[in-house]
Length: 613
Image (cartoon, rainbow, N blue to C red; front, side):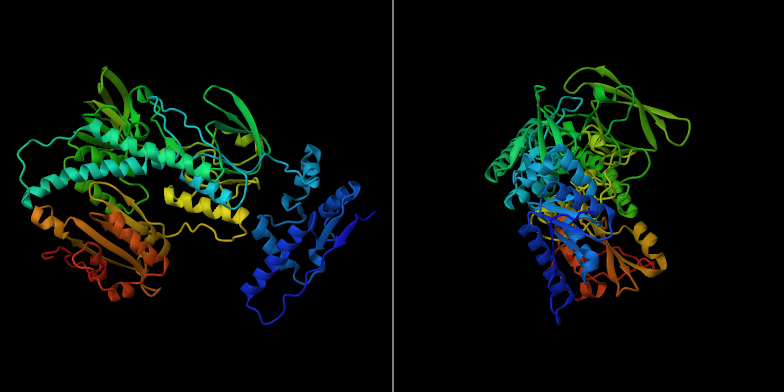
């Protein structure tokens, strides 16, 4: 067997007296030096048949290789470990051509057969782009822009398929257009209505009848969203990211087809891809649902007031929408199949529902719609809804102006050609399984955001994951996205903020006997003069008794819960304990200070009602 014209590489000793982290970083630098300093760099093992095949390939091409035999150097195992961090490939041969990671034996031979290897050896870029991001939502844009800042040639493909009601929107994804941003603004509109009521008790006098104008609100919100859409496009342009308003679909390895609104198709290639396509609202699959119902895709730009509304579902989207619609003075009913806020702490969820019910939202529990029928056309029209009980025989029906479906969301992964390149998805959910660096089973394809299996569906999570992914791929960084102790808030009329484990999950993970739950009701000072509900707001922390009473769950139901939770989330990242809370001096008078004075445990059974400020 003839040996290839290769040079055997040696790694110099990093020296003694260094910490393991310093030694590892030095090894990483030396490996990157080998990769960047050689036309062809092969990390091999002398006895590996796949490594031998690759060496023979380059020999037949007359290409000189630089070879490091990992079984013949003292720190071969460490080299392979650091290589796997750099490339996410754990096996040999591990091959680089002109600084581009080819992969292993099979990928190198595929590149040779397709002509890509020849282009790389000639020093030409083998692909149109270093990175193509499919999906222009928060996570996709964050990843694309970070990669561009790191000097890479990047494209973003974004295309919004209109909802069954014909609604579509601009660049920025769900959060900006039909999610967090318009939701919070409509929530604010409802809070201002409550503030008007409270203001009389604080001395404000006004005689004219105050009413809400839906069209004025939606126009202002859509104008703000439009400015955000423009800002995103401008930011991409400034960073030289190519933005293409077309639907992306894989046609073969490293190649994607982009179809625009006119049906015109263009193909692009890239070394790496990031899937960030997000999710869209789910429909019921019953008579009349897509014809007559709306979803959150449609609500925030609805050109008319929805009137008497049935909200189907008990997700946070359902309760948030029901809450602000009721706060704007509408007649609102929520139809619940099973439980409120699945996945959240159920004690808190029931308190959220109870507050909404006390403030005019009606709940139809244990029912599911089976038919939607249009009685009258109009803006809004009239719809007849027939629903059946989930607990046996029994049906109800009602007439509403609008039916809003909020029963969950489906991942947009089934019609983008993933099967053509072998990317695995969960066939039931459509979610994409990834490893701890957001890599799919196809090494050059990554995924971030709501489409990930087993990860949180939150905008800031997608943004963080996208930025860190780009830095790992193109910036030589190692930091991974931390999906633990991510704070969130449900913007219901009385906001619910949480971080860490629900009480149910904490019991499952740590066992009930190992936990101490501290809790209290509280009365915000702002509510006292206004004569609003005493002993409705609620705070609790869940502590691990045998880990220095470390806080593993943080929960608050009260005004501005999101603002309160954000600060405590940082403390939880730092290992917050009950003693640290006790040692913290509160800001008086605030809602957040209640966590610095928690004394009563659930186990004690003592009364937690409050009688003073």
